[in-house]
Image (cartoon, rainbow, N blue to C red):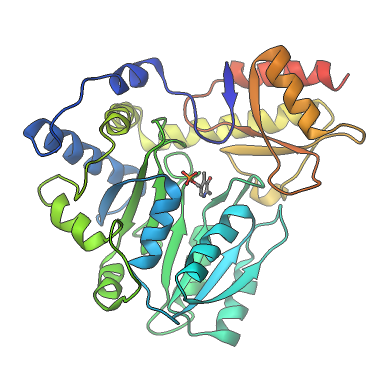
Length: 358
Ligand SMILES: *Cc1c(COP(=O)(O)O)cnc(C)c1O
């Protein structure tokens, strides 16, 4: 099967084997070594000296953790959204009773820093700004560096910068410390090439200051508890040991390959996939200035239904691509993060060539 959805992603064979290891005591020395190394290796890709907490949940739980540990009821939050996952971040903040202002950009576009700056000047100060590094629903990567710069310059003290990096981290650079991101969330099943079930969240000193005052309810995702246990390389509750085996093994490989090499590999595969789609005469959904190197959204030609094309890819070719998340859009999405080769993309292109009669 050629699993080309933007997560979960296929596991390399050695990672798959690591996932199959026997269970161990999560309060014992083997676990502590596993957890400690995994935490340390994550920092290489997060480009941070901050602590990174490994939570047992999908990525959405990590987004919730970033909110409940830093904010209080009624706090003003600016949710900058460019698609489905930006909307989800806003919904979590709303569900917990913060005062959310949404700044939405059209699907397919990136957030424009000058528009964000104007909103901050008009309606600020905000306690926090929510950003998406890579909007998986539209195949767009935001310029987090530029967005973080205008947010930090907008007020004194600056709003907290909480970033959903779930479909970018480990493939697209994000300089957590240099850019001043206070919490950055990622998920094991995306570019990390590990099974679903772990969310990783970095937490800056400013985020910890906010934690001390934050009054939203929290229990399972209490970062103070996570910090207490992480000092002993443990977690407050039973962690997803199998996923951690996979993440640990994958990160070991990734550290050996090197951050720059991995980013370059994704730059290549992103370009390769876009070239393939354009070669079929398709147009791309995203703004060309902000193409994502982890997921490509392609518009189907008039007369083709995305659901039928996806069905044919699956049934006849054993290729699984993603649907558009927006109703009425005849768009297919091709994931190319983590364990993916040119040949995987070639297969998608050859199949589409036949299905679309190109
Ligand atoms: C996949 C994804 C999520 C949701 O992650 P889950 O692990 O399904 O909870 C959130 N944001 C982005 C950008 C994603 O790609």
